[in-house]
Image (cartoon, rainbow, N blue to C red):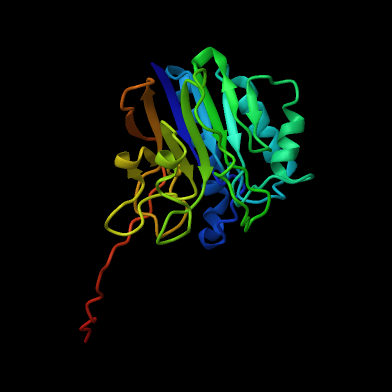
Length: 258
C-alpha cells in the first residue's frame, strides 16, 4: 500500500487585487496553508504530488521562490511537481528558478519533460504532463507507453481542464492503462454537479488548498490516496483551507425618521 498526498493550485504570489488592503494577508495565508500541508499533513504519507500552479505567475518574485525552496527542502518525503498554466516550464521561468535553487535537494523532482519516472522504492511509475506555454496546445498523453511488468502503480499527473470547460480526455486512465489520473487546474466545484471526483474513471482533481476569490464558497482541500496495485484506490479529500468567501444577501429598511 502506497500513501499519496496530492495537492495543486497553491497560486503563490497571487495578485488578489480585489482584496485591496487585505491582499497581503490573503497572499500570506496561501503560503501558510501550503506550509501546513508540507510540514504537518504530509507526515503520514509516502510521497507528495504537486499538480501544477504552485505559483500564480511565471515571474514570481525571488523572495517567494526562496521561501518555497526552503519549505520543500525541509521535507523528507519525495516530492514531484509538474508545471501548470500559470507556472509553465521555460528557461528563466519560476519553476526553472526553483529547480536551480533546489539543485542539491534530491528528494524534489520538478518535471520538465514528458517521460516516465520510476519511483523504485514505492513500486510506482509517474507519467507527468508538462506545459511549456500558458496556452499549450501540444499533446500530453499520447507519449505514455504501454504497461510493462515492472511499472507497478501507474499514475498520471496532469494540469488540465475537462469538458465542458476544456478538451482534456476524461477517459485518460482507461485509454492509457493508468491506475490513477490526478489533475490540477480546477480549484473547487464548478456548478451544482461537481466533477472534481470521478472514481468511475479513476480520475480525481486535487483541488486548491485555499479558496482563491470571492466566487469560491468552499474550503480548500488536498487528497489522501491509499493505492495498491490490483485494488481500487481509497481517495479521501482532507479539508485544509482557512479562507472562505461567504455571499450574504440583505436588505435595508428605509429609515422612517421624523
